[in-house]
Length: 183
Image (tube, rainbow, N blue to C red; front, side):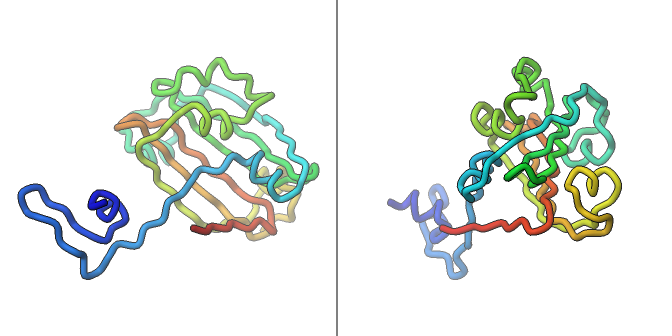
């Protein structure tokens, strides 16, 4: 029971220091990485998926910074489009570290999205999530079938197993996307 109170952020437990009720309890949120296919189907829509590209490439500086690595590394770079009712839903630009996740190289990403495969097969110990907005430009506007300059919702997730990077993804949602959370 005390461990549960500690995990809930209501008490502070210190070894040989006792347990104290926190005057300012921590508010915590848990975040489950959604499987985009399930998300679309739960909204009552027909799901489809298109693999746009799948290449082994050296990590750009922005991805190195997200992973906290100092030198470029060859990783699997996957760009894919998730559709709802045959309309663009989420454009996914993902980097997967094949040193921590070598199995991904054997996955047929034309049939199964990296999102779904990773959620089902690759546990993580740490996650960082950022929410932001961007204006649609060039390729993003084309893939999401939206006019250039449209406001788009962006979710960036980075996961690790221990200190080893797993994946960094930028998921850009088509206009009208809504993110809902509840407990």
